[in-house]
Amino acid sequence: MRQMHKELLIETRGKGLYALTGYLHEWLRGSGIREGMLTLFVRHTSASLLIQENADTDVQVDLENFLSRLVPEGDPLYQHVMEGPDDMPAHIRAALTQTSLSIPLIAGGLALGTWQAIYLWEHRKAPQRRRVVAHLLGE
Image 1: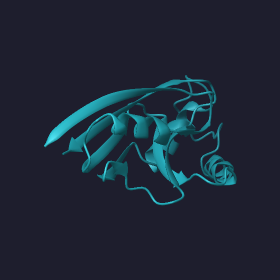
Image 2 (image 1 turned 180 degrees about the vertical axis):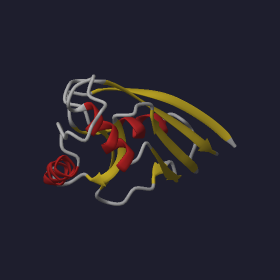
Image 3 (image 1 turned 90 degrees about the vertical axis):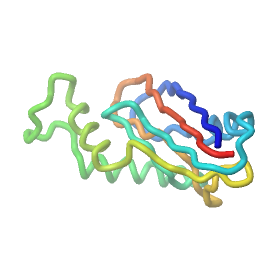
């Protein structure tokens, strides 16, 4: 068994989904590992990771609209408001979604479905520098 890791730096432009699949394919090609498990972990409390459809961008718009309705900004319930009206909602969004993913590696490729891709989901309005740790274990 071999293992490798890499930290991806993603510069976001605000709320939305940012594709990671292409970066990961490049890294995996150079790894020499053909069978194993890729684990991803986002090192932030106001962003998350997601496997979702990659063919129709309306899916991303609908996901963002739904989560914005579910977790609105400016709710008087929030006490944590020092970092702006989008910060506490971003923490709640991250708590409701995922901060880590595991994807099998088969024959040197990610075992994703036909329409699946991996995304960082930015929950803050302002641009951010997000770090995602990728850990690969296999042979």
